[in-house]
Every structure is written in C-alpha cells, then in structure tokens.
Amino acid sequence: MEITKETNLQIEGKHNKPILADIYFNTEDKPKPVIIFCHGYKGFKDWGAWDKMAEFYAEKGYFFVKFNFSHNGTSPENLTEFPNIEAFGDNNYTKELDDLQSVIDWLLLPNFPHLAQVDPSDMSLIGHSRGGGITIIKAAEEKRITKLITLAAVSDFASRFPKGKELEAWEKKGVQYITNTRTKQQLPHHYQFYRNFRENKERLNIQKTAKKLEIPHFIAHGSNDTTVSIADAGNLFEWSPASKLLLVEGANHTFGISHPWKKDELTREFQHVLNESLDFLHADAQELFDEYLELDEND
Image (cartoon, rainbow, N blue to C red; front, side, top):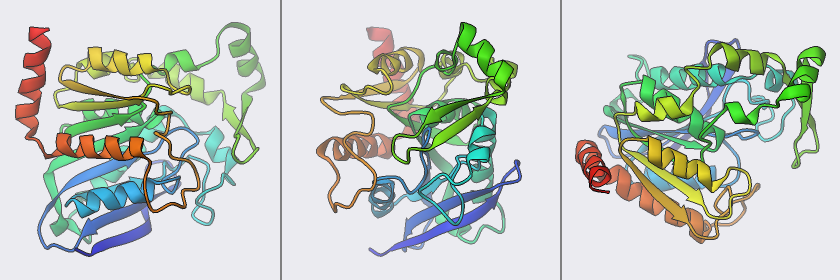
C-alpha cells in the first residue's frame, strides 16, 4: 500500500519559533491510530533512521508524526545541523513539553488537513533518550495518550545538571558550553535552563510522574548503552505501574543506528525493538494495563 509522506510542515507553537513536523500514513481511507515521536538531546527529526522508523509504522497502519522541538538548534533551512545555537541555549524541558502539546493539539484541530485519517481515541507517544523523559511527563499529563514507548530513556533530569562549584560558575557566567562531537560546534546552555528546571522541579520529576501513569508503558534499552545507564530502564520499569521492559543485548544508545543512515536495512537490534513495540501497540490498552498490573502484583 502506498505511503503518503509530508515533510517540514510548520506548526505554530508557544515560543515564537516554528515546530517542523513530518507525517507518514498509508492511503487507506480510514482513521488510524496515531504515533508521535520525540527526538532526544542534540537530536532532530531527520537524524539517522528515524525516517525508516516512520515508514515502518506507517506501513503497519499508523499515522506517524515526528517533529523538531522548536529550540533544538536546527532551522527550516538547515534540518541536520545546528545553525541556531542561541535557540539551543534557550531551550529547556518545559518548552519541549509545550512543543509536544502543540503537536498533539495540531493533529486534532478541526481544520487539520488529514483529520479523517486520525483516530483521536488511540494516540501513542514514543520518545528517545531525553525525549523519553519528556514523553513520560506528557503521557501522565495528557489524558488523550493511550500508550507510551520509551527508547533508551532517561529516568531523571536533576542528576544531569552540574553541582557545587561548576553550578556556581555557570550561574556567574550565565552560560556553559558542550561540544557536539558530530559537528564539532560549541553549543551553549544558558543558565535559564537550570533556573527553569528548578522552578518546575515537581512537574519535571520523572520518578513521581512515572508512578502516576495510567497507561501501558513499553521500555526498551540497550545493554551496552554508555550514554544513558541501563539502570535508568530499571528505574522506569520499577516506577511505571504497567510497564514491560525489553533489554536489547549488545545494543548501544541508538540500537546500532548512526547518522547519516544510508542503508536500506535497519540494524538487527533496532528492528527487534520496532517489532516488539508493534506487538505492544497492537494489544488492547486496557487489557495490557490489567495484565501488567497483575504480573506486578504476583512478583
């Protein structure tokens, strides 16, 4: 069946920068369950094999959306580099949560061009790495989300900030820099990032949020992930009330995918994750939730 693909659609968000989105769906004329994908830190919607992931789900009958967070540092003219480093420096977790909410709302607008293709009663989120943390929080806040998938997700935001003298130096200078190993750029983090986290600490507490989830949660993590510890997956599995954990033996943070991805085939590890996640998505949400809770109670 033919796949319709529309790229770089501009969504108006809350923070004066466009949110660029891609949509993928098959041409069968009926409402489809929705998947919204959130990229991670220093990530973007066109990274690696995210296109192939979108095609995989669209071929299986899903309406798939991937997007760039408005302040991820890319631009409409340059989708795979970071020309807008000031925007990168002004990014924070609550902006990303707002951006995700804008995407959810956009899909359900009365004038959305493909509204007849969307089933609003079946909406799932997928988040990679830092995007996984964002999707956990949003899934707990947004009652229209029915399932959650996190890939190599972080389980805590607070521990990723500097402490002590390093934190004091950041506050004094107002900015600190991190090297993007791919582009060799020095990317700024303005101190507002930490201030925003501190001001929204309760909302951004992934542990508390995960415990409030009322939907099934599929957690995938590679055993050789050196970016986000496998312990994070264990935390999420423990906290999330109805969760399933898939540990992928030998897989790294991106399940063997790199950027750019020129191959037609996905890695064995990433294909395994997609196949397992599809089984999860196909299952009835309420039955899954009840089943996972029952398994947890029996342990």
